[in-house]
Image 1 (spheres, rainbow, N blue to C red):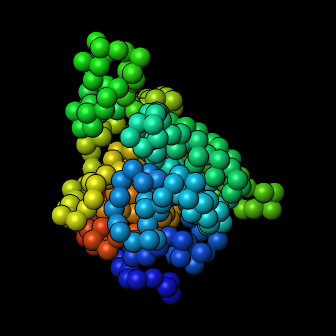
Image 2: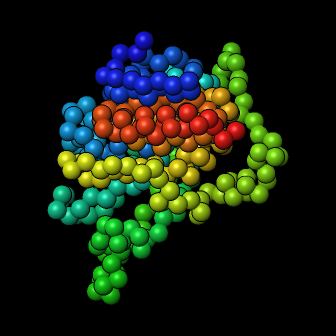
Length: 290
């Protein structure tokens, strides 16, 4: 029995309403086949006014202090030989904040935290995103064409997204559970595309529908479903447990069940947890695609 604020369970999922820092230590060691998630982006998006929400950290250093605990617990719960795929991006800081403007290397922070926790840095996938769409959404100074014409020393490229992937290497005494594929379920043409260090064909708009609340300070930012699907198919077996310590509205669970996996998700914000339960349970009742 997991101590938490609330929970919902189905035949193949357990959706937990609670703080990952409280819940992860209660999960069994060496039990998770894949963990895929998008963590809070160190204050970029604020989803919850709770002091337990990592997105409310005052500084990047405070955020990473909390995240390092998560990384250590992830190492403990992962099956030896399996992977953690973390969706992230570089973060912008502004002249109004620091007197200068530039980028913060969130992927680098996460890589260090996972290596310190015992993982090996396994892979980095760059996920192409349209700079015109970014400019339209954010009005970023460095992407404006009028800025290029006025003084292009301020101009910069658009921001891609990343999967930074970590592997818990098995020790000699560990039992190995390999992830296997066949020519039929994973043809070579698919592998040639997915083996690319840059994924050009995923869609930023391929997300679950979500109900934004008036009190949300920023905006819901769901993890694209096609990204989750690639991680689940590539790095887990049917029947494996897929874990998200930052479940949000349930994208990882929705895809995991569709792909014939089991799912454990943790979410602190109650309204997001309820949306996640609704989305995941709808798939649970339909059955997987396999």
